Image (cartoon, one colour):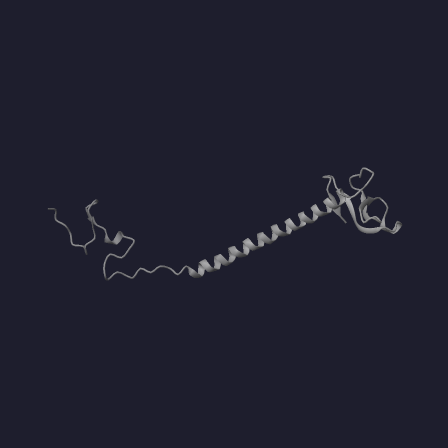
Length: 132
């Protein structure tokens, strides 16, 4: 049987040396107490910051989505309206409702006619209608 050291003696069998001073933890009753740092405050602060960042990004994406849906609705409204001409990119057109409550697109401004005016639109280079 090998000469075994007592449990309170820190001896490294592999390296054949005493290495209590090299350990990252306490090795005797008289050693200082190991305490963990309180990270709860740090976590709570950073959780709050991350939540703010996520909410800001969500609000940004929601605003972008709402603008896209509004643009889709305008395009849907104008493309489903009646018109007998080919719109020119960059020109302004006016959307009205006729006596049958059907939407139609015209080049005549609201001051020159008596139909129910719905809005002014411009066709951009991407063939998307922009509300003016």
